[in-house]
Image (tube, rainbow, N blue to C red; front, side):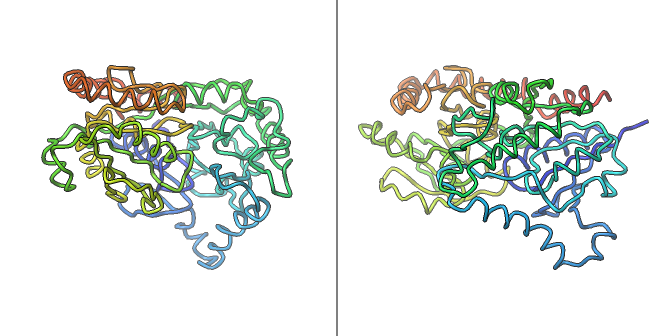
Amino acid sequence: MIKKVLHISTSDKGGAATACLRLHIGMLKSGIDSKMLILDKHSTSNPQVHQFWEFKNYKKIGKAFNFFKRHIIPYLNERKLSGKPDEYEIFTLPNSLFDLTTHPLYKEADIVHLHFVADFLNWSTFFRKNDKPVVWTLHDMNPFTGGCHYSAGCKKFIDDCSNCPQLTNTKNMNLSNKILEQKKFLLHKINNLKIISPSSWLKHLAEESQVFKNKEIIQIPHGIDKNIFKPHNRKFARELFAIPDNKFILLFAPDDFNRKNKGMDFIPQIINRLSHRNDILLCLVGKNTESFNFDSDNIIKLGYINNEQMMSLAYSSADLTLVLSREEAFSLTTLESLASGTPVIAFKSTGPDDLIIHKQSGWLSENYSTEDFSNGILWFIENPEILRKASEFSDRHTAENFSIEKQVESYLRIYNL
């Protein structure tokens, strides 16, 4: 009998949602009975993607009540977190007003596959009532911490999360430890759970954690559709974006320039280190590029690109892509760039470490050293034949090791299909 797989994600928009969608669509193409259940729907073009209250029983309660259910708990949680320092990533609690086990798609599913589920999954309700096999793909650290999605180097989740540095200046500095204890308690006796990490960095952290330390964690990298992300003619791509053809182009494409973890504060230091070169142009792509106000004649802002084909062309227009994140669970930006034939310079020891082969498909810099990072850029500028070979290798390496088809096969083994 063909088993039915239900992917659960808070949204269909964002990095984690993109990874979930690609896997879901890849499974549909492979003939798997796959559906996706989400809370926040931004697109109507994706097949078999259903918003929680699309179904008849939920429509009856009305839009106003649905809006209340969606926003009241996050609002109350935000009040508890009032005063949280701005430099950190989001911090979420494991509660919501949604009981996933009552939903028709849950009831018909044979396998429940959790992804990024903050503000959607009610841990207490779900793990007490669930009787189905669960696969959980980690997209950040939140499932095994006291609430943070990236810990900024903090390792309190290994022992306890009291006196959380991310809750400094709030009235609930020990809320994180209560959350950690709740997660430990709810998962302690759960045996029908398989945990997947897309990177060795995230896998190691999960294995160290109090929540998952006795659970098996399997590493499966995200996949990429090589029919979309592939090398394009560079001259054409530059003309499309009005990028000068006589410059060495660096692309920096975080999803949002307001997210400090993405490392835009390193850019001024790197630009200054490269200031002796007048042939370098930095192209910025992402939301809120206007908030990046570093004054330089060598920077252009392309804005937000919400189309995968256009994004692949943007990567192809560049000579190198810069990934400056301090912590990355995987880095779809790195994978997309490599698949488009553009080598990547990144800090090592987090997600990109699994994707980049040093000096073959990019440069893995010593963590947070803008000097070493800049040296990597200069090494490729000064060795154009090595850069050309790195571009060819990146394209070939991603096709062989990070295809959607290969990712789907790995998950089917996890599902035992």
